[in-house]
Length: 188
Image (cartoon, rainbow, N blue to C red; front, side, top):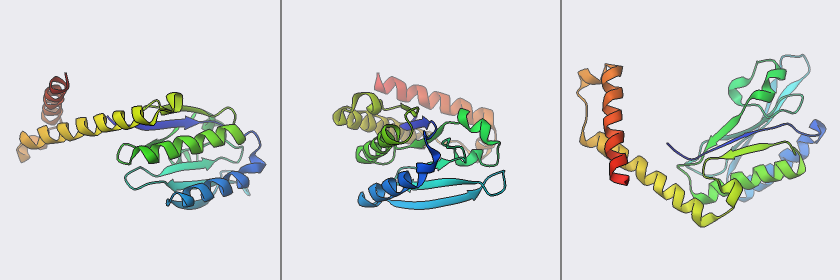
């Protein structure tokens, strides 16, 4: 449960990556976020994965905007794999614990990347803001999701497991299923 943005694609012209980096760095810093520039060796000598790690807002996961030597957006976990395989890789960033502002910022960064650098970029936004661009709808969804997560956590606190029971994954799984059902019933 949460709000996550999934994205993948390839730069139309990998030689323009530095321009993309400059624009995104200025945007994120202008929003008060933090940026880390990455240059990591690729499997071929003299080639590099390069790009950015973005901390747009406290509470959100760090967003990776890292590119393979041939321009494919590459998740950090896929480094070291053959670059031909990266076209099938999807990156993601969870925005649930940030605010709608941070979610919107990431969507608009990706929209700019798509418009100016990677026309084949695909984005799957679990909050659907990518499709509807309605900030009220986004805020309502993020609020409902936060309340559901908090309700689930509260039910787990109200019905704790003994230390012995916590050692058995089957008991933990059964308890989580029962608590989830209690939360779902409350939301109905």
